Figure 1 (cartoon, rainbow, N blue to C red):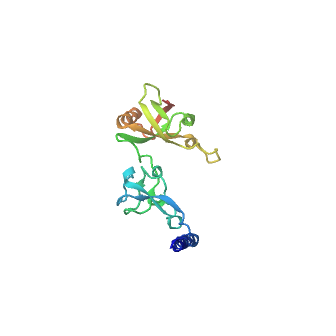
Figure 2 (cartoon, rainbow, N blue to C red):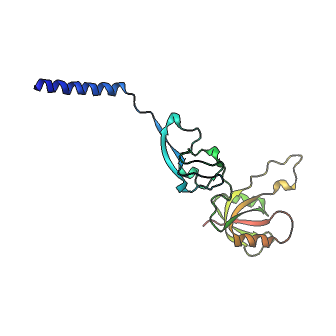
Figure 3 (cartoon, rainbow, N blue to C red):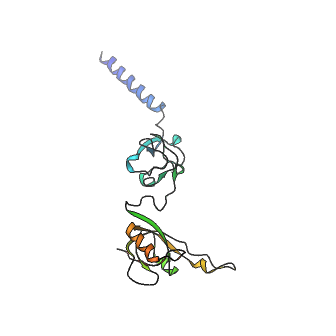
Length: 198
C-alpha cells in the first residue's frame, strides 16, 4: 500500500515537473497609461483621468506613455475611450497656458535689453520694470519660456533680429499693470526683465 502511495506521489511530481518544463514562461509585460474614463477632445488631463495597466510587450501600442507626469496637464487632441492607451500622438503638445494655476495668465514681453534674456530660464522668478525705468510692474512673474538667441547676422539681417523676450506667467492684475505701463504705443510690449530667484 505504501509503495502504491509513493509511486502515485512520484508520478504526480514527475507530471508537474514535466508541465513546468513544457509550459513556456509568461510573456514579458510593460506598464502603460490608459484612460480611466471616457475623455473628450480638448480636456486637460488630471491625475484621476488616468490609470496604469500592465499589457504584453508585443501588444503595447507604439508611443504609449508610461508615467502620469508625461500626460497630466496636457490637452487631449482626439477623444479617448475608457481603457484606451494614452499615446503622445493623441495629446496636444504642451502649451504655455496648459497647467497654469487659476488666476494666472501667460504674456509675451520683449526685453529692452536682449542680453538680459540670457539670465532667464523656464521656472525662474522675474521682476518686470518699465523699459524707461520706474517701480516694478510685476514682482511675481515666472518665466515659462525664452526667445532663442538670434542667428548670426547675415546680409539680410536687421535691427529686429536682436529683439528677444520671454513668455511670463503673471497674475491678471500684474498683466494689467504691465500692459498699462506699456501705454498706448503700438508694437510689442517692451519691458526690462530682472531675474529674481527666490
